[in-house]
Length: 300
Ligand code: GLU
Image (cartoon, rainbow, N blue to C red):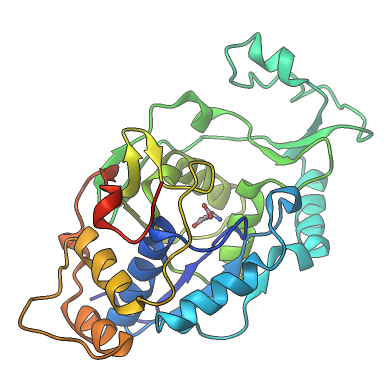
């Protein structure tokens, strides 16, 4: 058990309704928070508005509620926090810890797709430029609560990541870190598809002089090797008629199957049993688990 206070969160991108893969992330983060007497927050990561679907936020919240995954406090929407992000970005620029960059994607491709820091000391004008962090001492290894010691070899973890794009959109890497700091998040349980970006996030925490949260990366549900269940590969929305079954399938995925001697009457029965029996060490130390479509509630 982690010493209190614990603040966890689920941070979906409202690009479509919840599917089995996102239920797993929601459930794992919820159970870890509850088993540690913590708070569990929900944040809508709708910063990349073109990727978002109208009313997906409401669908996601309804689905969480139907599964008994009740969040603490108000749901935070990134789309309403632009001023906050800009203030933090301005501070980094003023402190010369971020800089303007007008390199195009084609130019970066010529360097193997990894940004080589071309504009670092060039004092580029702000007009039409992206903003990048000047990453000092990037972090490439960390201890993960599920996977243990992790070494990131992807060279993207070393590059001066974009904080604000040329088209004016704040980057996921910036806002996720700013929000987790602002919301006092101490523990992040999320899919292993975000493992490499965690190195970047840890570097940003250091740049911002903040203590990072603990991370635990759970396997993602995939339809085939390297193909995680997602809107792109047409993962269907969860069956809203079978919330107990959906939770039981998600628990089995997390290697915490409900014993056959227990017949839950409602979602709260399942969640209570799972909270009482939760142990993060039971989660498979894998990047992905292939789920057979016919065994689950979704169809590809
Ligand atoms: N919004 C991200 C997603 O839906 C998750 C971000 C996170 O958990 O840090 O994939």
